[in-house]
Image (cartoon, rainbow, N blue to C red; front, side, top):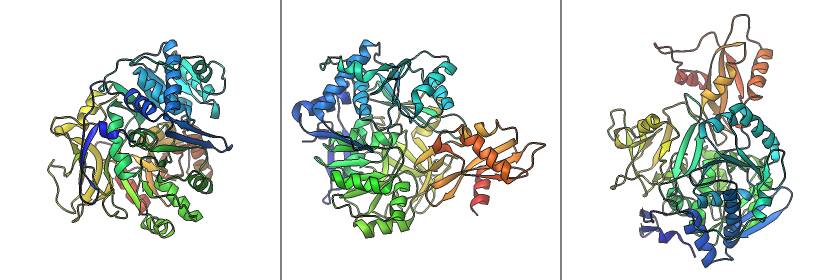
Length: 546
């Protein structure tokens, strides 16, 4: 009952491990029409989305439901002027309207811009200016409509604004408009090479970069869902991720639906391990994927029985061996790590058919040609540290890897220098062919499953009159993996003190999205710098973790 084999050919070994996977899809491939609508026609009653929230509301949607509701929203948005190539900001948390709206935008050929509700007004201003968004579809929760109205005013842009479910001043109610729209939709001509999605990802020396994926992107997640997460045809897969992050694309729609698995969605704000496990058991989740932070909390709180669970995976940051050990002792399941970026799909993982190795990134995806290269650009040997790079396939294509940075061709070319894609991540390979993460070549901070660029935090801190210079780094943290730390040189007239530390922390955190919050402040007389005046973050990190 799965559909993925219509778009690829795969070769397995005697253990069921994937040896190769080659995509084969039409020039006008569109996930909305060619996957969702086809599944709705063939298996109208097949479960696609299982949704619940803290208020004990529950909805189970079939593929025919997804087709119908996405068609209604597509017609409603089309009547409001949304066309092929238009960019639409989407901030819908874990509301089920996200799935309807995402598929609707795909069908229209519009470019969706997923974002988290945690963004501040300043964050929204930047995204509105950078993206040139024509419209926004948002939740009414967390005072988001108010922030978005203020952001559009400050950005000097005019948007078509839509809310879902509830009304909001200055917003049209998309839920009501959809109910008034037809369930039938004539196919809009699109190409597989058209832009489909725009994610903003953290940068080390500037504001977030706009990462563009085309309509072939969903197909590259077949490997993600089937051979790493081991979601099953007829099963129920649960990835813990908010829809504003790329991890939602990895685990909450594309690959899972292609292989015939339903997706579990739990609409919550604050993570509670007991509630999470309750959802897994109540709905009999068969495969589960979460960032290491979730597993740390589960282990700390004590892991109850999860009898329906057949597979568990994790990605985002390193995980302590003790967590692997305790999770397996309690559940009998090995945690399978995976690795990739917002710019890519899954690159390395502990795949089906191989014995998972605790702490290892696993092996390269057979879908890609991956090497470790040294500073000289040549492949490194066993146990030597090199950068993870991706080579184009024989045709020169690189499906699943982003097609460009928004309005920054120079940065895109820099990533593809020497004919390969540079991830910026360092690793080494052992005698058994397993890869082990070593660190990033840049200064991205990975905290609690989120990626934070230090520049964004530093830029806010420099607005405080007591801050003459600052540098933001990630330091080891037992729960978050890394915590954000600010190292500060005070301006003349200010002296380090606990009161000033608290004042600066509160100043920064009141202006930052919660996932970017500063956890500690350290004062110093001077910052280590290169001869050209650049701050040596590597020196700061070694001092703060030593």
